[in-house]
Length: 574
Ligand code: DON
Image (cartoon, rainbow, N blue to C red; front, side):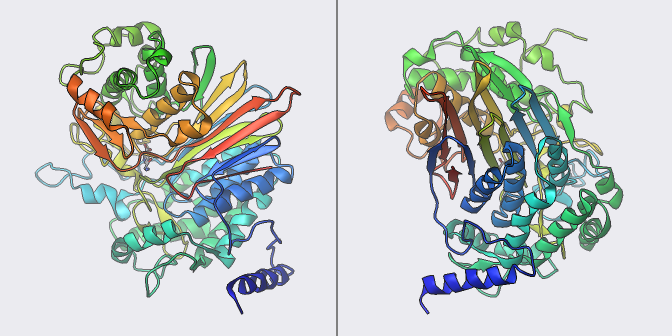
């Protein structure tokens, strides 16, 4: 039998099986699919890190689900088909703008376990042991994703059973993996062997290769428990028991109580105006929305559009804004449920204007001189998905295990990877985390506290209606990528595709360097160097998923979805 015939046979076989199980005969084939990078249509659009996830999202929209339904189903599928960042064992943030005009922010960031303490990653001499916060059992925060999905259900139209079924089917009957996924799994093999004593689906006797089928039976059972018991199917009972049993195998500290007590929270999003557009972005415990507002406001009066896209002057202006915003992030930001963060001041026009008083066009600033602002006393793997439906609901979700495949530790018997999000805390003031981010007391570890994030799911409204739905992974490069994507569209009039795919740059105060991605014009790097900047080339920055929404002359929606060229990202719609 040739390959195609084998696949057809397999689909037929599964369809027969589906009489007994719930496997639907789907419009997509998990054993044979291609990656579509852009889509334009008028009924609905989904863009995510994996083609199967985007396709499921569109299926849900076609079945009458709204953008929130689709976002929930896409996250669940990503937890199966994109184990490097899609997750049940991590956390994330959702930003939505709904048909009725409301703006929603849901925080399902992981929390430090109850037994966590400030110095838990320091050795006897007080030096951080990075390995402990980045790999293995102790690096995991209490997962938030499942609570986040159920908090999102408040805005969904379809029953959860329907939204979770595609993920169950893909876990149970498998799907073929891409070349990138095979490479990812092979790359982390030594860690998987080191941190797991149970039998796990991600390890097999030989190397993974493109086209191999990944079946995740334990994960399917976990998803069924969540389907049948709701949030309790994860935070209590068998799944909770398996997580805690895994913790006990090594030095993990997540307890049954920690799991039972976890709650997702609705937050007030950061909402602001930039050149007549309204931006809705994530608030603390993500620094993303604050950094994005600070950066955009710092350049708003400087006619950047006239400087030209990626002209040295435009890049320099943006870099100087980024430097100042990141100095504030390091000094002031943390979980506002635990520490007082002067958010109102950091976001005030007066403060932001003052921050740029020492900006000199054409001359590199210095992070040694540019500290965090003085405040008046006052009272690589995360994943993003964007969804738009025909009714005007839009959703932006960024979700993560922290870096690729998180702690590399699977909750044995439950089939999902646990995060290593504890590394996003500041293990010790002045010591950078894996993204080079610094922090102070504001982001020190405390039981039950959420670690500071950079994730920035964002919606831009034009005349009150959704215009851009955007976000990306990339650690500390997330807010600066968002800054660029938005300025690229609004100020430089770039197409959605160029706004996403053109090379990006990044500055984060310390280290005092401008990082530029492969393909960033050499002439611009040279100009920046001659202004006094240290310019460092680095690997790719982010994987931006963007939907641009306009109306045609006859009033029809025109949804243009663009999936980043940097990965397996795929845009689908109808
Ligand atoms: O929350 C954060 O800021 C990080 N844990 C995100 C990590 C990330 O984006 C890694 N992806 N490349």
